[in-house]
Image (tube, rainbow, N blue to C red; front, side, top):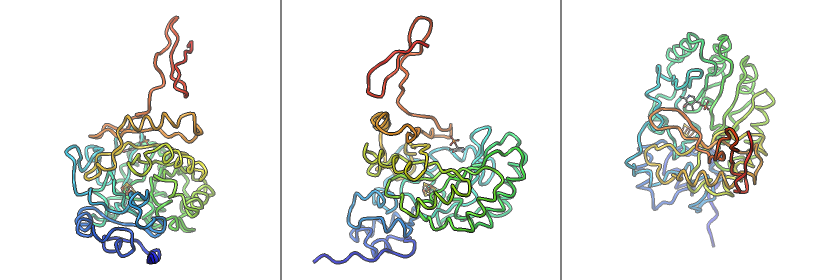
Length: 356
Ligand SMILES: *Cc1c(COP(=O)(O)O)cnc(C)c1O
Ligand code: SF4
């Protein structure tokens, strides 16, 4: 008779040992996984642990959060700062790569740790979890002194790891800056720990005078639990729209069914897909790599077969810090000029002309 699976854990699992005991990682891998754990942060929160099918090596949630021995090999092209954040750091916690918007990282911990994290060398328990208060103030002073900044993007780590009181203090300062038009929050919390979006946090979000936009990191339809969907509705009730950013990942969402299923599930949850990121070359993540041709072919296969509102932009964050650019397949094959028509590729793959 098959032994009953261990009951779903009540708190976040933070070690190879805890994952093995919960039946979420094979005991035979213990030594390798302990080496991984020594190098990169591990956290599997209860909501996600409950979604994992024990013993299924292809489980799309397990693949994202349960450490794997492959993480121990760093490929030659992989680097600690794949998107060149450091080159654009104007001061601790503040990264400016574009003239009108700035990324602010007041916290360097997450409710879970993605095995493919692009900031894995800089997030997790090995780091100071919060930016010290004087550096938070210094960063906000910098924004206040730069009237060309229209958007402040709170990132990290996960900004929703901050207490409602601390978040409120940040919003109050931003509210006082006339030139800041919008505030964006990049978070994993909606699917990792939706219970964190409680009344106290929602009140703080609802009280922001600046329009807030949430961009939720979500990679598989299974992550959209009823709690996650409720959290989206709660955000919308306090006036906060929700977009999604996803990472194209081998073995998680790299098929027409997997990616199409994710995009449709996002729409059903009232979330607009925004970016589909090409994998950043962080150390020990090569097993998640999906080649660009394959990513383009996937999006091409989806175009015309799913709602246009579900289509994200397939995006590369250029290594070295040169910013984000779309990698989508080009549909424009010739630009019309004079008597020559323009040529485009139609969703069915045929070539069509247009006059101007
Ligand atoms: C990704 C990113 C942004 C936001 O880019 P959008 O294209 O507006 O989503 C801003 N600043 C930095 C440093 C970034 O990495
Ligand atoms: S949520 Fe983002 S910052 Fe946090 S571990 Fe995942 S990829 Fe890294």
